[in-house]
Structures are given as structure tokens and as C-alpha cells.
Length: 82
Image 1 (cartoon, helix red, strand yellow):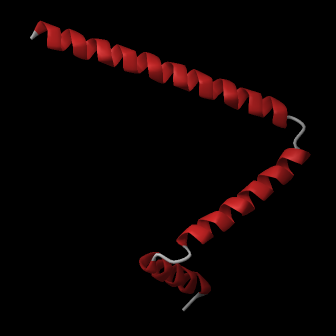
Image 2 (cartoon, rainbow, N blue to C red):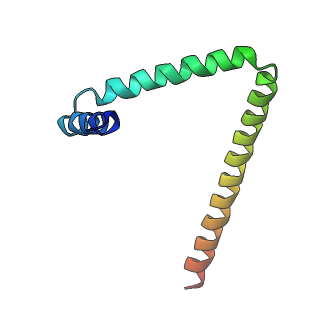
């Protein structure tokens, strides 16, 4: 049995037992955060990227709200015409 199969079997049994599922996710999130912080210190455009991501998020929220308002209006028009 290869190491990958052993690892997947181990992870599968842990998930079935409900044990260490959260601790595995927590460990991975810590590793990702550490890797991102190391990358951010080496990235001179990190502030610009962060600003653009915030702008994109604000734009997506605005668009979602406009779409929801349009859908609500359409539903109100349909229920009013019936």
C-alpha cells in the first residue's frame, strides 16, 4: 500500500470517527497563514493587491444587492399582476 493510500485511509477513518477533523483543518489553516505572511513580506505589491481585492469585494456586494432588488421587484410585479 502506498503512502498516499495509507494517508487517505487514515484520514477517512478519522473523518468517520469525527476525531482530529477540526485539528487537521486548524493545522492546515495555520500553515496557510504562515505561508501567506511569508509571501506578503516578500511581495512589494501586497498593499495594492489587498486594496484591489477589497474594491472587488465591495463591487460584488453592490452587484449582489442590485440583483436581489431587481429579483424582488420582478417577484412583486408578478404577484401583483396575478
